[in-house]
Image 1 (cartoon, rainbow, N blue to C red):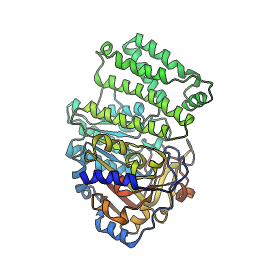
Image 2: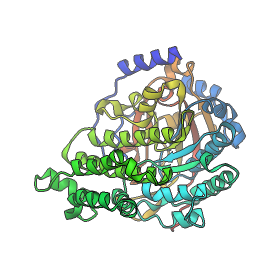
Image 3: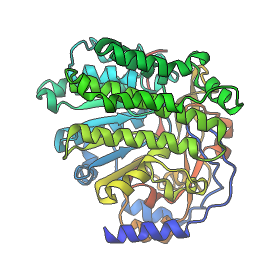
Length: 459
């Protein structure tokens, strides 16, 4: 482990990526990548010699044994609309839960709406009648990202698994993102109205700061940027403080209900900062505030489940792969993978990336555009996906260890494809690659030569 820490410092200092424009690819703010590394026979041979087959869940035995000893396992995706990514993360998650006692899954989704799925999988009072019933009611774009049959299958398995456990040992499913802030605001007010009318009046007055903007946080942020609107950071923080200051006045409220409401207040507070910084700053502040919120949410979930708690995270590769070993570090962008390694130690964190050479994906042509099944073209020359394809293997995974981190051919920066919820295949080779030192960014990576689009519930 000492050698890993040394290499972490070394490669962070010596990595150099060509200067690029600060791009904006819908949900994921991805700097444009350079043309990347031109693979040679040595790199391909090295990867082929270490590649492990990937056809059934049993093929992951070695990876599960290693990951199962960690506190956090972060599982990625190279797009938000690929069936194989969801299906294999499902497989990994079930094994970690069944064989190694992991306590929760936290995903790149909304806290308030996905908490209904948490209620269902835990069999909580008032829960919906089925996972599909919850996911079909999601109303924030992109609906396919969590409203799909792959998540239904996982949720139904969790529900069945939890039925045999005491209530305080049941595995949870949570959103960790900063969006859907007005639903969270509604939940905070509903909580106070039910349990303490005095606190409800205070919270409502604080939240009135947002009233002139309806339910449009972008309009709020733009108004603040133009100097014609009141900044609501202090009122949003004051509502969150009500939970901190008045827990004794709410002592009759059950822990889960209180935790849900307090996290909703945290979402409102941090969403205000995210939207405002997105408009008023031209640096990494907004990205980092969102990443910080997701990381904080995961840490609070660890606290919720107790001293020995362990969690699984589902998010895009740009969030879970250590940003220090990508061109993101040029722009001072941080992410959960980086924060988790620094806070918990690399020996307690396992980062799993996903990649595809070609196939299909569900995405939109523009923000809030219609869901489409799009063709993902063959990866560009010199990318890690092209190198992987050159091995001649249809699907495999790599466990990245110190041997990989000393092999020169594999330690060169290469483009690593990243597709957001907005995608234009015509511009794939110009806009959708992040220069990456793969063995440092991840602890393992799964590759598929060809992938399919996931299966949405709402067609």
